[in-house]
Each structure stands twice: as structure tokens, then as C-alpha cells.
Amino acid sequence: MAGGQSRSGSAAAIPVEPPIRGFVVRLMETSLPLTAERRAELRVWLGFVQASLTDADMAASHRDATVRFLLGVEEALCGAQRARELAADVGTEAEAAALVAFVDGRCLHHAATGDGFDASRISAAMNAYVDRPFDR
Image (cartoon, rainbow, N blue to C red; front, side, top):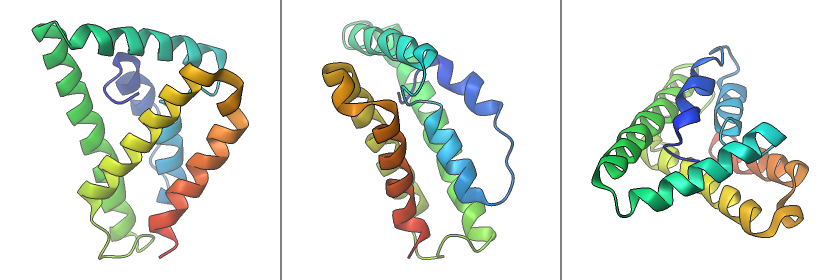
């Protein structure tokens, strides 16, 4: 749910502790519909995104929240590089964008198909996706 209004509050509550890979997973999971509360937030976010397509103020708010979230993910990945959990040649900006896009895609597919992308499958896919840059 890149740029979702609830994202910044729940993401800020996650302690940054090694291993950083675990932090990245927890950070990304704040946007995934893994609980009833997050599924409700997803529906609100989807309405917000739709409104941002025609409302300039909402579009600006969405852009700002998305940029803040992307920067937070990138900062976490840079921290993983400093901790030598992530290879120095991983492009943190591109990887942050890819992670956010992956999460957004999972959210959209869950909203459209429900059980086809249930919480356990979404969580397993997130872990596998995060493993890509960390296992290099």
C-alpha cells in the first residue's frame, strides 16, 4: 500500500534491530493485508488511490507519502549494507522501488481475488522476495 496514510504510523513503530533483513520484512508487512485490520486499511487505501487520480491535493498527499515510504525502505537497505547483510553492489534505490511495487501488486491481487492471495501465501511470497537481494 505504497503511500497509504496508515503506513507511516505503523512503520514508525517497528524497532530497527539486526538482522536488518527481518526489519525490512516487518516494514513491508505493515502494508500487506495480513490481518482483518490491514485488509480494511487496504480498502481505504484503494479508495484513496482512486481519488488521487482526479484530485490534485490527494495526488500530492499520495506522492509525498510514497516518497517517504520509499526513502524509509531505501534507508533500511542502506543500513543492511552497512551491517554487511546486503551486498554493496545492490542498488538500494531500485531495490526499494521493487519491494514497494511487489507489495502493492500483492495488495491489488488480494483485493481482487481474496483467497487466491491469502495471508499465508502473501507472507511467504514477501519473505521469498526479500531473500533475493539478501541472498546474493
